[in-house]
Image (cartoon, rainbow, N blue to C red; front, side):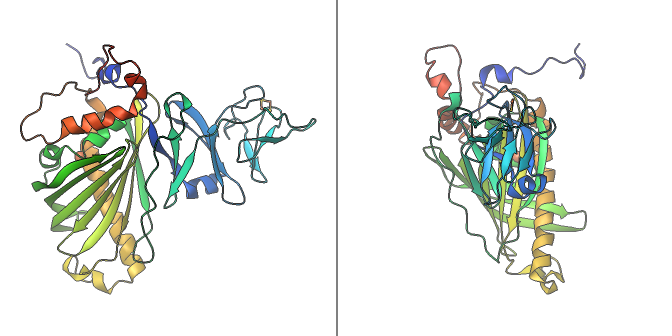
Length: 355
Ligand code: FES
Ligand SMILES: [Fe+2]
């Protein structure tokens, strides 16, 4: 009888390639600027990211085209005058990836870093990962309007065994909202819609919550989920009783072929009727109220997502799924996902299946 320690690993990954094409979070601009140079394993690749004096962020493969040194700070890579300096022989690269100088000879023109195309949304830096190094096949949406009525974006990250198709599937799996999270009156409010790499899912729900262990509320919420590939989902919430709008980004990023890092990022908008939520909240300065509410929303979302993590961490990819009539558009979602595995389209007719 297998015990927890020796239980065989679920075979999910045998059927689902670990890296669907798309845009995936690298880090926040704030983190890159603070650390000067970051290194990480991202989509199974070793990468570095830094920022020059003009604010240009560069995300590059972490290996030097000279003789292959790792360029990360843990090996001795550093940023000088906005350029990345290799720890092995001192070749220096600007944010276009070009080698611009070496200590003792003219910079070889062919010495270029491999770069990843980047996009930034409200201080969150994303890079494109294409199968076989393909260029971006679609773009992320425009940055949503923010401004003074919105709080700044707060973040938290969880790491577990998982896959971005499986984490994103939960946004169309309305049944789990009741069963796993205890929401009630969950009702889709529009058909799931798909337009290329964009998918939208809309539903209403109610949830009784004890917020931060302090007070009970019954939230009456409308949610619109905007999915732009499997690494970028934005959920717009509208809590109707107190008139609170909030945004939750769910950013699932494969580390390697086993682990994902799921970053939750949230911001809240000015509340129309704060006194109905907590007496006294309406008297707080807006900036303090924003910060308080954003932290509350984020800690609640983290608590909910941890309920999912227990499942994700141990589940396998079930294909085909044996669905019931109330399961919602999981089949349609899986068809949508196929576009992110061009390598499987190229192998049409093989025994591997998605869906
Ligand atoms: S390996 Fe980077 S400078 Fe030689
Ligand atoms: Fe969930």
